[in-house]
Image 1 (tube, rainbow, N blue to C red):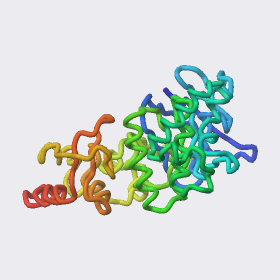
Image 2: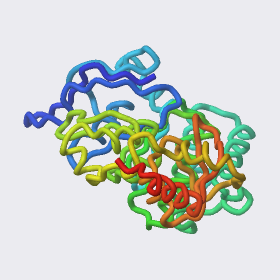
Image 3: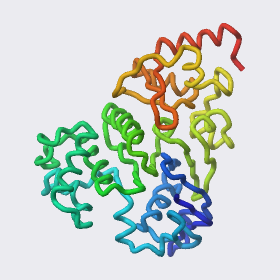
Length: 320
């Protein structure tokens, strides 16, 4: 889907932002770039839609070099969500969402239907919010509009550059959960930048940790916790070692307790491969986690059930 081959970015002062990057992002994948400030993660993201030009190497999308795309065609097919939201204050919510469909000459009825569909997706009743201005919405509501505006023309790829970092913790967690639920339905290729490892662990199918313009480790959330590549990774993840062995995840809990009932619209979602320690952190503020595997909710695990499972393993001497 998106292929980086020896991609580099060097500036005129010889600063190297990205150095010889090689990786592939799969279709329908939720892929997260993370790392300290200045590591090259946002530069890498912006090279995908040519906001920043490559200095070397080749970047492919669907088997075609990004340099061969008409830049307008390329960006119309790539949604983009910023930290700053950047809604146009003089436009209504409907007008903000409709910008790219209008550029693509959609007819008015199709645009109106798409706006209503997207607002419904994120729990904003169209009849109430369609005609409001951005200043009439909370920060979390504005960011929801920012997300669906990026989806308006049904792009294949969505780029998200620290979209939730300016929000308060409760709004941020709610939007993370809503994004996971939304991704189960829309199955887009999402490339997400964050500086928060917990956010990366919660959202990403795979995570690419960068430092000084290079990949330090590219792995699943479980892989980062169980087999960190080096001391830098251990420190970034938090230096936590698995308490209950290298194979125990939320999926193991479900296999023992059964799938359980789970809400249609769960408050919190976690991937089946999340290790128990990470799940316990997620359950610090939630009573129940819906468990998702391959884009489908397969069960739920309550805080009580997880603690009981962990206590049982400790009693059996499963600590390693």
